[in-house]
Length: 136
Image 1 (cartoon, rainbow, N blue to C red):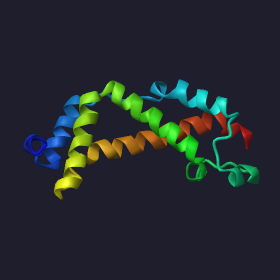
Image 2 (image 1 turned 120 degrees about the vertical axis):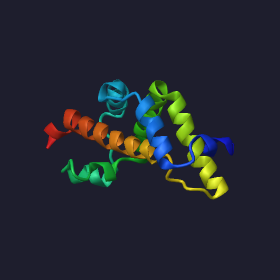
Image 3 (image 1 turned 180 degrees about the horizontal axis):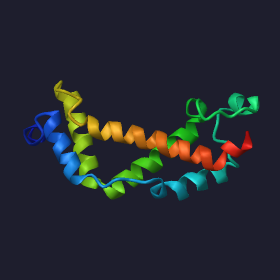
């Protein structure tokens, strides 16, 4: 796998590759699956003590997702990301994995990780606004 670092020796090289190849995701890419999951568990996507408190908050609900909800939402986003950007996803993952094994710079593919985290937050906030904000 050493050749991956020959293709992407630094963050700037990967960032260029990212900008040239990234196909953006929108909430529509995950909306049906996010809402279907929430409906399947009757909107009980939070830790029980948080939900029993009765005051759902846009500011802290993400820290109070159940483990099942968190994994489901992350898996759904990962699948949507991979569907639109399979080569980009595999390249970023390979860079990160190889960097950890070889003791190289693990930040080369930060553009991927930053975008994933941004999308995860944005999409969960949208789900909250659509399904839960009116309950409070």
